[in-house]
Amino acid sequence: MTRIPIYFSILLVLFATANWAEARPEPFRVVLDPGHGGSDEGTVFRTSYARIAEKALTLQLARKVARHLRARGYLVTLTRNDDREVALGTRTQIANRLGAQVFISIHMNSSEEARRKDAEGIETYILNSTTDASSKRLARLENSVISGSPAPFGAPAEDRDVALILKDLRLDGNLSSSKRLACSLQEHLVRATSNRANLLRRNRGVKQALFHVLLGADMPSVLVETGFLNSAKDRSFALSMRGQTIASRAIADAVDH
Image (cartoon, rainbow, N blue to C red):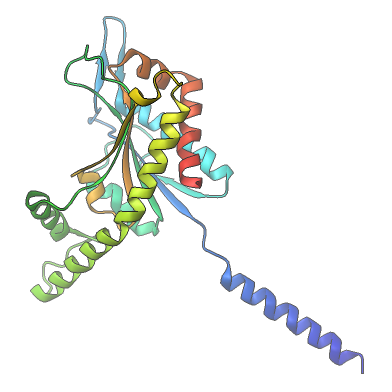
């Protein structure tokens, strides 16, 4: 008589465990994109005794962000983990192939005039694909890269049209999430790297631009300019261990927010 309740209890536990396993959310994957690499050095700051390339600083920062996020349970992939060149389209292909929830491209800024007083601070970008010129460029990209795979040029025209429409719908659907991510990144980075005296001056805002590296992403995606390489203040901060720790933790906090 006592076996039935025991068996029933076991079945309940097994059922509950199975349902919990099915209900668990999949791990949240973040793809970090250290800007430039290899022969593409990005912006370069030169003096008589130093040469500092953007590609090196973005990789250092991305590695530190990855460590913070992994410590919090995120799955993190870097589009490059060494000094090599990665095609812009390949960067988002990596994120698409992995089914990432977030794509963040990390860069450093530079002003045309080295002595401009406003050449410091942080700005974050989301994709602007609303203009006629950008729509044409987007179409050209999508004709060669659709969801991280080569476009089926041999397929019927209507199939390619459907694929392009679906891609546009994904971009539109991710716009609000990209804005939220961009605002979170901007807020956390500005506050972490500023004091009361220069808080407003360092906040260059969230903007829209046609960055090729964001065009192929099927998930919320942003490009963040973490400072100006030709600003003594920003450069010193980016080169220091303290600065890298503060900035990397701020980016991780923004994703975790």
